[in-house]
Structure formats: C-alpha cells, structure tokens
Length: 146
Image 1 (tube, rainbow, N blue to C red):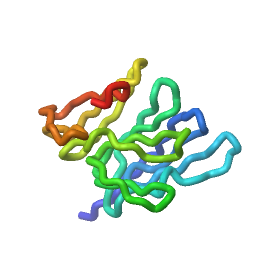
Image 2 (image 1 turned 60 degrees about the vertical axis):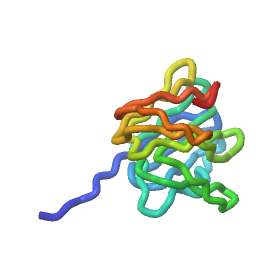
Image 3 (image 1 turned 30 degrees about the vertical axis):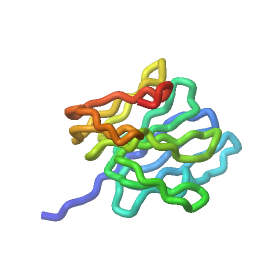
C-alpha cells in the first residue's frame, strides 16, 4: 500500500495582501500589487505548516505546525516551537514565547487578538523559560506576551 501526501490550499486575508500556501509546504504572499513574494524565507527542512490564522486587525499571521525554526528574509534562522507569528508591517517572524513542545495542529484568533492553539503538546515555554502545562490546548495573548 502506498502512502500519498495530501495537500490543501490555505488562503488568509492580511492587510498587506493575501497569504497562500499548501499544508506541508512553505508560504507565499500576494501583495495588494498582485505580486507574489515569500513570507520570511520559509520553515526548517522537514517541517510542515498545519494551520494558519490572521489577527482581528489583519496585521499578523499565525502559523502552527511541526516546524522548529523559521528563516527571516535576511537569512537569519529563528528557533521556534511549532507556533510562530509573522508581522506584515515588519515583514518578519516574531517568537511566541518559546513555543509549545509538540506539533501545533490548529490555530484560531478572537476579536481581542487572543490566539488559541490546539495540538499534540503538553506545555508551552515562556520567554523567561518558565513552562506552563497546557494539555493539548492553550492560548496566547499578544498584548501581554503570555
């Protein structure tokens, strides 16, 4: 029996344009000038993106998956833990604490820009290296970086 990788197209509106990509692949961005460009420089080899969500004010893209690092447009690598945010205004990836300890499979945002993440993880690590037990679901508040 052969296995086949399934791919799904993801589309998410963003103030600076439209984000599109395939689950399991890198992301691309179509700006309001209708030209494609990279979102950062992609994810670590072997990593996959499982879900995307956009902030309520359309300026931040959140990606969850199996990836452990992202690459900035500058070529610098940023270590992350399966969840990351991309700010359109800065054209850069920004950490969400130090991420979660296993795959982030679902990402959603609320009107107050709280980010909800579901997946295979047991805990998240704050920037201070403190860990928080989550048991498969957690939330991130960008306003207080927690």
